[in-house]
Length: 297
Image (tube, rainbow, N blue to C red; front, side, top):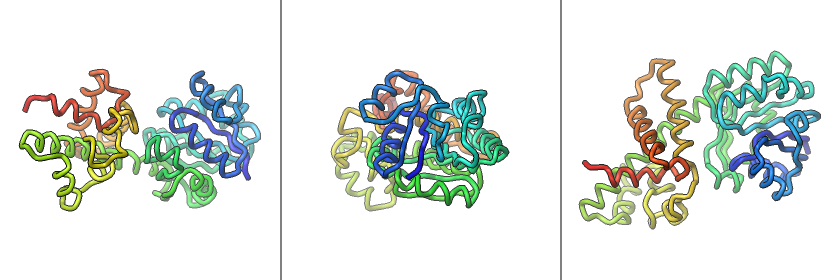
């Protein structure tokens, strides 16, 4: 059993922290938002009044925060993790942020004597609740070895991607593919509608042929073929359109920084930005089929 401080108790962080507690760890959480704190209290999680209260005395600090500036402030700020963490505490950041911020925070942590990994996740709220997340982990071999048992309490697939920042690199590359593939599936489903081909028939064919991809077979954007997808519950997320747009913007920033060509990624980013501007940020990202269906050819 380890003493764990968990920072960020939102839709992802709370079930992740709860799974660590179910695994036998002593978890103390902190979130500045009142709704998150209420939900955590109702779930029976021990709460700290501030960040320091969650971090002081913790052998492991885990964070699940919205964006790079939040991570940098939480770790490097004057009242942050690096100020309050006990010597040699293990630090695990599960947020999805830009690669450079992840590397900068890891360098600052190493300078204070801490092992740190960036460990963004795939699997969404459903995976967080079921402890079936995939973790893409960047950091030293030693840090990964220390982090793995805690990640295994929250997920099913734990992959060491390489040095600091490579977990974030893997996440944004993966979601770049996901965003593009979802749009392609939506376009095909809408074209099938106009051609008089039933959704189920296209699914039956493409799921067993060269059009097969996760966006079709596991997250189909139309009701029926895959009963568990958000399409069957009015596109309640899941993984919101706002979160997909965030990840695509991170990918585009990385592409610009490295000079990588991402024309399809750029197009997908523009489409999700338009979809979000039309007050759809809170819908599941697969709901972009609504916009595609209503767009003239």
